[in-house]
Image 1 (spheres, rainbow, N blue to C red):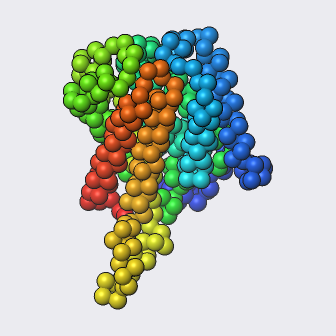
Image 2: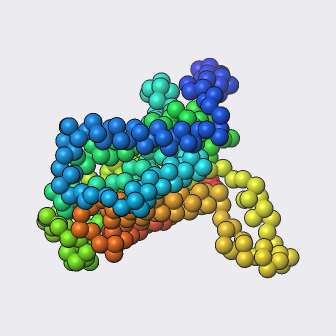
Image 3: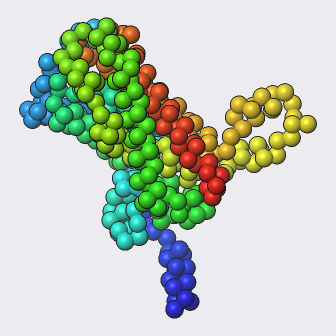
Length: 355
């Protein structure tokens, strides 16, 4: 019985899984411009269509964008946002790390674009959350907007980008580190809940502290502040469950699955007695493992994208918002992203986790 089981496992490892998606035949030089055009066109079409099904209340808080720099700024940032995902090689798949019992379903959904979808959700959500909480925009409008923003980035990436092995559970341990940990559904749940708790705690502390007065001073035309005064921490954490899962997928999973690279080998050979001043400075600044470097870069990307997307969109599109107000609201979410990254760094450095 044992030998039969071992032969079955060996044959399963030996048989490669054919990729579901074939490499794109579009020239590399044209892929990114096509990606930008597809994403912008899809977003415009979906928002235009959604205006007939429940997004009309957004028009009541929007201001006219009649300055060329306002429209240009949003378009340029959209291209930059897509470029971050494109050249940052953010891709993955739709269902992260499913168990063996539903592996067949997993292969049907193994498309690239999941990383950029998670980044889009996390960076676009604060703007829509502001409108729902303080401007009486309906929650259905917020979720519809999030779906449009995510789909308008996810679908073009799915068509134009190849998938990464970091988000596939059928790859070998030689390609991805800590595979058994990443496949553990219980760990997925706990880390997602932990990220949701961090977001909830940051928002709750802000609601109970500096934020209400700050909103009154810098946000003209607020309709309701009861969302800040009546907020309960358990419900905030529950409301950020999806954000927690996206943060876990974008930050924790790629970092924990990162394998040591050439940089790690060079850092392991570092000798403080023979190293030059430049080598010593570089070692102290960037002498981290591949896992830590991956987490640092992705956390910085998430904080930057959250700050830029939230600040620009809030200041340019919402009527009566001062620049300082948009910066403060964006800074709160960027800080939450940094704290989530710090918590994941702490979790990833426990015993039993390989570097």
